[in-house]
Image 1: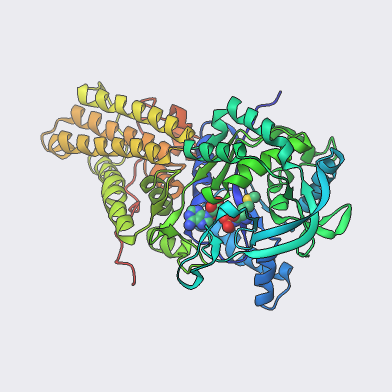
Image 2: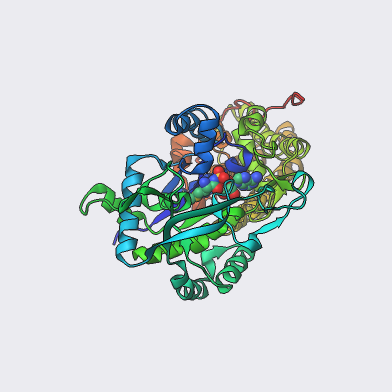
Length: 530
Ligand code: MSP
């Protein structure tokens, strides 16, 4: 048996519009988590991509006077791929639902499900929200306000839904109700956080009705192999990206088939809470229908809010990720959103809060510590890291704190408590800053207490070594710079190869490392242009 892969997916994003920070939030969380697992020495696969079929995208293309494929190509190249580098994401693959590998896999999958007897012909009559691309139940709708007062509207988009009446093919979702409940009873970790699990369980317990798996009034999609006049319903096309991207349906013996063996089932599907039902009810039912194993965990995070509502382009509240990254940098973007908002809950973004944390925690906290440490080694030791000699009580206390911070951060990140993980590392940064103030190496230097001075300088730099390793998944750029300022690569190798699980082991940075005071890790910022 080969080692299992930590396989993480983001949702695939609709290409009807350009990304805003709500989308970048999911990608960033996925990137931090996968970088963390890579630095635990695990085999990792990080997938993201774009959802290109369906009414929403087709209408947007038409409104812009272009063919849907041209529209998708343009948005993917100009907006969705670039946002990955904007937030510094290191994804392993990018799947597009208009790609050939996806189309083949989707057609194959539904053939199998049909052969297994879970698909039948019928017709759908009822409400449909194009914004959600979802067949709605009466309980999903809420009374509209302002211009839509007196109408029933979509609870997510706040707009009226459309009335559909069309022949299509149905998926026998109802026959998987008991199997899903049994699965979730046996695997409480399969839907997280608990609020999401409760929502899913109550939805399943309320009774599952069969659901349309195809559309006859839509043409922008993947044709059903047995009825090419209809296309696969966009969600039942999109969800399959998680298997088609890793080789589902490939000929046995091919590298793709081998990848599927090694990669599926997914470890974590990261999703926003608005698309939980698709991932925790429809998706596992589809997999059961095809005889495939179920993902280990679906984790639903909260929304970035503006004025108390979900940030969205439709409501003109979307902020483009680059407007924040251009000002603060990608590291600060990644740090801020995962540190300031408890993952799983909603949160708001404000320039003031972000600027305040940047200044206090990054520029004055970590940046200043690194600048002081490297400057002192340059000044008092000609840039050569001294050996520590004997550790006194203050040094052993700091050593123990690093070890505790590493353990706490690891335990927190493994359960997607990013704020807890970052908080533990940040507390250690504060402890090291306090140590510097208390030990006052400049006084030791002035008094000629060389032995103590060396012990203190070593302790600070070794602490920074641990901080760099632990923060690397969160802030890859600044920690790579810090690694080079510490001269750590010569003795320890590349920063990305350092294990977070070993970060708390004291005494790794070799004496003799060449320390340089380089660029400021988090430069002072001008006021944002208003
Ligand atoms: N295409 C579907 C997903 C298919 S997955 C098989 C979709 N796309 S989306 O572009 O509308 O949203 C993608 C992700 O972005 C979702 O997880 C959604 O929750 C997230 N976000 C969109 N707006 C958001 C906020 N304002 N805040 C946080 N996340 C939000 O749904």
